[in-house]
Length: 432
Image: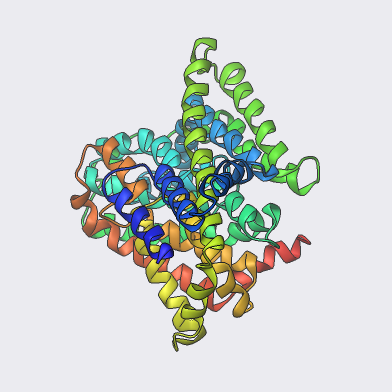
């Protein structure tokens, strides 16, 4: 009965507009109090204990740093220089700007770990450029929102860091390596329908008449941005620093590029950058800590095992259960961000993963792919919401364009499910 009230309270609080973190914490605290009626106040000591325990994990130190990296590179002008370099490579013509938008979003995924932040950085440059070339704003918003979904797959990824905290046997370096090939495949898959739709509907009629940036100057301007993922991922692979230390190195590198090389960041801008990153980091970490209370209540009330047993013995079989999880998490991904989804559902799904003996790293990539699909699935897709706001269009206008790109990324997810080595080959090759 109390377990039912836990989920009912959480859903009701969400529906009335209570922030996700507060809804998790309040529902969990209420369930703990009801479960310890005889020693209510003593039982409630579990609330602050689990609030702290949710934060007291070393890998979480990387989260605010990678968020700060995203803010710094967003302000530094790296995205604009990467766009010019990409255009210099592929040239001008129908469908080329959507290709560039997706390629730049994938590359920025190797710097920042947040999908909405990526959508803001790429959208701020590409949506205006695509409008000048004759692309409809609704199409541009769809392309940017879909492209930004690759961010949580391509390392570094905040979602992978959270998953590693929740799942024993899934290290951050292994997850980062496992996400690389599926992330690149997802980006390449998005390019196909984006270019096809642009050419079929004769968009971008003015693009061919626009000047093509000179290659060598564009390469020189973009070289500092191009070096960032090499520094972050190469340093981790070489053993020079851990993922957490890599985030700190990336912060100082980004400040050096923005303040010394490009000189687009002034000293007076630092307060705004730090404030913006601090607010976003606080939201993420507050949700993590409050979700610790919710997870404790799930375990105390004995909810996890019955739910897992019900799924395992549902008669659907291993692949039927996987199909059910795909439907569930893509639907939930339309409403919640990846971090919140992991915090709520991973504790419930761990026994299912163990029952079917799924590799925890592979399972983490599959979950992340499902969440990535949800991030640009209307009506409440977080990435699409950001790009639509920049493009000043209603989300309903993107539905016709988003559908083919959703299908393309769904095919990639099915391939990773059918061929686990697409995710596991690189971490095994690197010895993780």
